[in-house]
Amino acid sequence: MGDKRIDYLRTRIRDVPDFPKEGVLFKDITPLLADVEAFRTSIQLIVERLDEAPVDVVIGIEARGFMFGAALADKLGVGFVPVRKPGKLPAATYRAEYELEYGTDALEIHQDALNPGQRVLIVDDLIATGGTAKATADLVEQCGAEVAALVFLVNLRFLQGEQKLDGYRVISLLDY
Ligand code: AMP
Image (cartoon, helix red, strand yellow):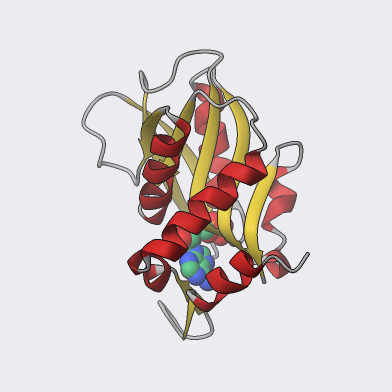
């Protein structure tokens, strides 16, 4: 496809070996956030890829999904809803658990954050095994809302996270 904008974004993702533990190649998006041209371009490209699909609300997944999600919500002219790690949201929540390499983790959403039938765009910086994204889709459905699409800056395609999101529309800008 040769989109020069994608090539540019790729230069703004820093590989950090062995973080947060040995054997993990961490994709650090902070250089992209610090570069206004790259940050704006990433939001613009996601909007283009959405191709005017109707979205009523954007969900950002803690923590790096907050930055992209909030910017995207502003650009789309819709509200923003956070999905957070357990114990962070103050009012009544729904919870979804997901498997980690060792044990389980969970995510939460405010029970009144979404209205039934709302079309929700889920945003995170990166999809690896897909567990985080799938748990978030489950939360959307617990609220009676609908997943319009899931968007990621980076897709670690070799981990096949998309397989957990079968049936959902998945958009990613940079595949590895
Ligand atoms: P997963 O549930 O396995 O798809 O993991 C996705 C979540 O973990 C996202 O919120 C990412 O920010 C984070 N994550 C997982 N692997 C990496 C990685 N190699 N580099 C940066 N972030 C990662």
